[in-house]
Image (cartoon, rainbow, N blue to C red; front, side, top):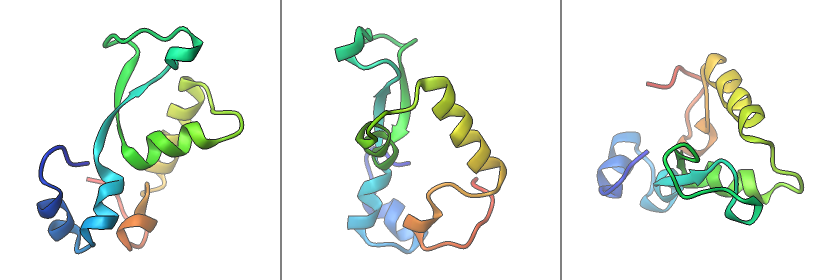
Length: 93
C-alpha cells in the first residue's frame, strides 16, 4: 500500500498510476458506522482501497474475523491482489 507517493509505488511495481490507485492505504471500519461502529483505533484498520471497497460491495459483507481469515488464507498461499499487479503468485513482502 502507499500513503502519499502513488508514482513511486507504480514505478516500483511497473504498473500504471491508475492501477496503483487501488492500493492506496485507507482506514477500514471493522464494524460500519451504520451498524454502531465507533471511530476509534480498536475499530479501524489499514486496508488498501480495493479491499475496502470490495468488502463492502458484497451483498453480505463478511464480519471482520471471517474477512481477516480470508485475507490470511490468501497470504499463506503466497498471493493477495496480484491480479492488480500483473504478478504470478508469489509471497507478499
